[in-house]
Image (tube, rainbow, N blue to C red; front, side, top):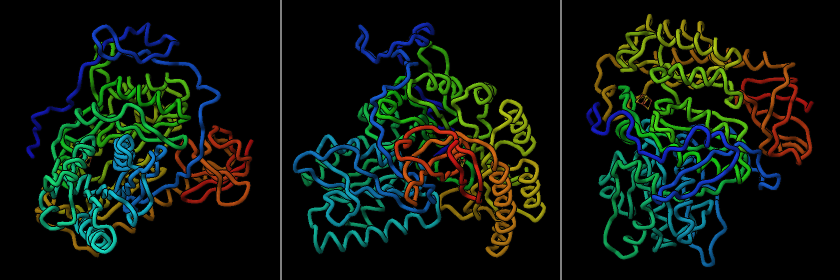
Length: 517
Ligand code: SF4
């Protein structure tokens, strides 16, 4: 794919304008106007006291740990069973939930194992080395089970490996009936029908993101009080280590009315916290209901008006797209949590250039100063890659200096690994594995110490915690602080779904403990 996508930076759609007065009106509606198109008026009322609030566990997860999409709707009589196995990031978790939504009306109920499933979907991630090989191994296990016990099982590969490998999957794994890229899961019913008709293998790897969002069910069934909402997909940045621009396509922003309608529906089901997600979430840009261009800051201010939504987060951001409007919103919008994930990857300008990050360390540092001036209580999180091709000892020291100067409350750090098909894969001066390991250890020692220090600094403070579910012990509750740490404290189960003040009494590197105030 060329770095200059034909679709441009932010493909967007028009929606019907709504006056600012209407937008600040307390009425709630999402209706069709005389042209038959949708318009909306934002709701600033508090949620219904009877809104359903059911608990669901939400624990931090490792990116490599597969998760299983949970049932979202009651099964139809004689429902078929679908098993969706999800690898990778929160975008894939969201996609799996939406696949379950698409399949529910045609009678598929999610199950927790492929053993008795009629349809198995592997929703794959290409971010890690050898991702495709892991998928082929899993397909081998599924093939054995299908041959032995479930010959009519339908097998699909979805997600980024599907996008990257396409027909190769069909060739190497004849057990696979369908391959669908991340922009095609709304076509699942049609694809299943084609497989049932025996019209041969079905492959869908088009890049039409907007069509997908147009065709997904408007309502989304969720459990729990905190959920992800995709507002943007794709990436035009082409960092030389990353496959995302090749597997997810160009940057595309979802229309405002779709996002608002989805979040209103979530609030009606009891959701209190939404995390707006996108590969480059702060590249969000589209024509707003007032006819003006809306960025992420404007969108967040309107999401904050939706009754029932008390907490907003967004991830993942790129330093290049961190504009003044978003920084001002961070400073002014109390529902926006004081936690920002803003990856830099490396502290050396020459490595940043080789990575094609299109910013320098000085630019990043200036941004952080502005953000901290706007929101002094903000905690920062970052991504770091050590051992990028050509990284010298001096370059690595620049990363250490960056971490010392900026200070992070949490982080994600990795050794560089080759992603086939990316420019980084063919760069000279690959760093030896033992050097990468040494550097990663030194970096992580520093980052983990900072995370520990940050958590310790919260002891004695009272934080608002969104209670997600019961804890491990009887009488214990588990929730999330504004800084996203898991927080344990004692309290009655009736508090599940509430935001309650908790005084922090002790802290580890990954979690906090406290008492109800
Ligand atoms: S900005 Fe993020 S998603 Fe885009 S290419 Fe770089 S690392 Fe990948």
